[in-house]
Image (cartoon, rainbow, N blue to C red; front, top):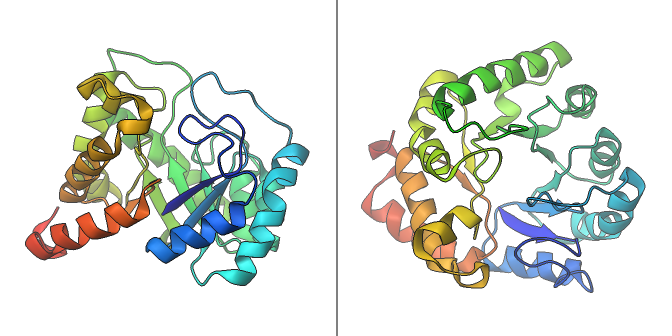
Length: 256
């Protein structure tokens, strides 16, 4: 999943692709992205929320153009049902909700009405260092999937995301990756990992955000070994190559 941020304040590439997000999206597909995730509001620590109208103003033209020009499915990274509905009507196939249907009560119904796919991410309002993050994810996703079922979102359209970088301590970020087999065993759903260039990687090696490419590859290969199926990344070509080699050495049937 290639990341396409149309935001001025994204932690990794804020503002860099605003001038021509369509060209950037096409480049990610050319590099081998199987999905494109388009976002118009940064969710980095300390981000400034934007109204739904502004979020759609940022991403709407890119969504419409990419829906007509690329062959891969589009995902919209949003917490707002109004933005999700507009994106789905414009050709987007998946809603990527960082609150896993637990932020806005209307989101699950929006996804169900359009028969869309959904990425449901684990999140917390506050960090709790004493928390068993694996158990917390199980409780969180039980609730998210109950909301999905109540709204009529079909189970086979759902992907789970452990939420690396959201509401967790440094140790809990690592534990969340290690808990991927528990998620797979408990729910039987694909797991997406979105850890590209995040702060916890820099805490391990000391690398600044612009130099966390190797760290991202290493962490995503560890996640793949744990059973993750989708990787939300900035550097698509490197991951395509690395995962081809990884898959040749450790085929899917040999993973959790």
